[in-house]
Structures are given as C-alpha cells and as structure tokens.
Amino acid sequence: EPEVTQTPSHQVTQMGQEVILRCVPISNHLYFYWYRQILGQKVEFLVSFYNNEISEKSEIFDDQFSVERPDGSNFTLKIRSTKLEDSAMYFCASSSEGAGIFGSGTRLTVV
Amino acid sequence: GENVEQHPSTLSVQEGDSAVIKCTYSDSASNYFPWYKQELGKGPQLIIDIRSNVGEKKDQRIAVTLNKTAKHFSLHITETQPEDSAVYFCAASPQGSARQLTFGSGTQLTVLP
Image: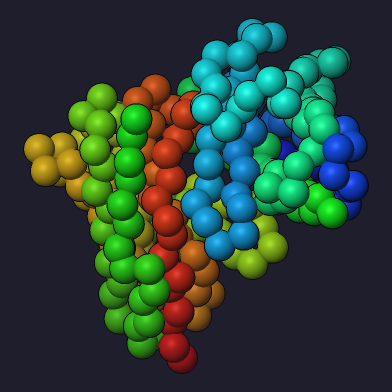
C-alpha cells in the first residue's frame, strides 16, 4: 500500500538554527500538506501546496516557514531560526481529491 | 475560522460493545469530515470520511453520521476489539478534501478485553 515517507523521524536542533523536514508524498497525488501537533494538543494545519505553489496557509505559517518541492518526489518544510515553541510533531500528508494520507511524522525538538 | 469540538476526551468500553464519539463544527461552509485513528508514535490514519451531501456512511464495523442542520457528526464503532484502542480525531474542511483540515482535540479509546 502506498505511503507518505518522512525523514528524519526525530530532529534535535538548537534555538535559532534552521531545519529542513523532508517528505516523499504518494507519487500520483497532487496536493501536499504540512500539519503539526504540539505534545498533548490538536493537530493543526500549516499549509497546503498544489501546482508548485501554496494554495492555503494558516496563521501559524508565518515568514519563518517555507515549503518547496525541489524535484518530482520530495516536499520540504523549512523552519528558519527555530524557537522553543516550534517543538512538535510535524506531519506531511498528500492527497488527490479527498482523503489525506499522513506520514508518520518528524518529532522536532528545539533546545 | 472553523472550530471543531470533540467529546468525550477518553472512552473505555468492554470488548464487543459499541463506541460513539461525537463532534460539532462551527463553520457551515465545511463540507468534508474525515475521521482519523492515531496509534502511539504514528501519524493519523484515515478510517472513514463523509461529505456534506450524505447523511450516513458505513464501512464494516465503522459508521459515520452527519447532521448538517445541527452541525454535528459522529463516529460509531461496533463490536469493538482491543486493536481498536487508539486516539481518534474528527476533522472538518471547507475544501471538500484534506486541504485546510481543522481537527478536534481527540478521543482516547480503550477497549478492555
């Protein structure tokens, strides 16, 4: 069964550093997303991406964040100058129309 | 923006009994309502979804009902098994898809053998 793959599974970074979270969506999907889940809280929408551009983004997704599809398979989330409150599980998802398939997530810990 | 409320936050049932989880949403523009199951250390896994033009959908032991007028939707799991134990999330989207989902706060379901 096709799956969304995320790397790394766990990333520890120092406050102020840049991190790039990587995702390989399902190959025939057209929409790509990033969500995050702070420990013990709801899953929150960050951004959706379609046709090589951002289609929707939440208030959380400020200038500190960016997304990119650098080639035909990868989809990345970059966080510039990380803050302690960026510590969370970050989930990538993809879909055609309808149901989103989520990856297993990257646990980001900012110290 | 959309707000999704989910109840209960924890639910324990005996194996073989039914479990019901309820969600309400605030934005009448929402038209897509998926339910996700999340096991420890894994990402949310889609188990069933429903669109606003349908009142009920069933897939084996799992069913979802939607009341658009009251803005609430529910997940029903029948004949529960220990492997159903997980956190269940409801969500809503105005985009008819997984775009811009607003999630509920989750229900920890425990099925007791």
